[in-house]
Image (cartoon, rainbow, N blue to C red; front, side):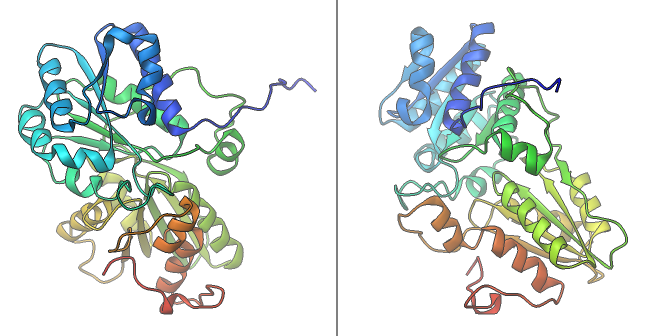
Length: 359
């Protein structure tokens, strides 16, 4: 048939994609080092350490020291990747601001376990990093939607040398080639060997609304809820011939792609943001921009943020937790339909009976 025959690719974990990407970068640049705080296995730094033991630093359960140590290395021209679980970086917030951000040092923060984490439960959920990092001036903050984007973002933050950066991604397996090709039309036979740098603060449209419809919805996702957003868009268009749904991947919370947000606001009747984080994060930044820009003044745009609920979500599978949080496909779909004034079916209950995703 002329088609290339390849063995099915095993779906990697996000952690392993980070580790492999860091090894690739370090192989070409002796100034790349990895720092972790007693979590080498959980963060994938152990894999890096086997290849580059002299460039690997485990400081123990001392996140504050990890951050200040990374700052000191950055001052001397070293390229530190500081890999700490999202929930544990909270311990080093003072150092993040005073020792790194104010100094504008190019420390690269790697936040594993962003969002809900499954059976480790409330102590390990990475619920708050978008809120607590997003308010710090001068830091670039990104979240990949899939494993290919993670590789690209690793290359991107490696090349940023004038400010701190933070890259957040979830626990568990990535999407796999079949899903990537189906949902995002990547057309890949195998994973790219290397990541490519992305433009700072620029998102992308992964699915455009169909033409000749009476109502248009835009879903703007940050992180790995993008796949659920595309599935929701397909379901809406499949059930409602008069509705078109655009899905965009923000990629960056800071700097925010304001041109993309403005375009979505101007060309759609409904704008929904989706993120794997608490109130005060990505959706709030988008709404702040929309408000200051006057996009909400005429009352023609309906905007809604979808975030983690204002409660601690107990242990369970990640799928169960995102259902409880109201951030699965069916909740995204239902939110859009409700804003369009269309009937919503949520199985045994209606969306009106569900708790909102913020208090």
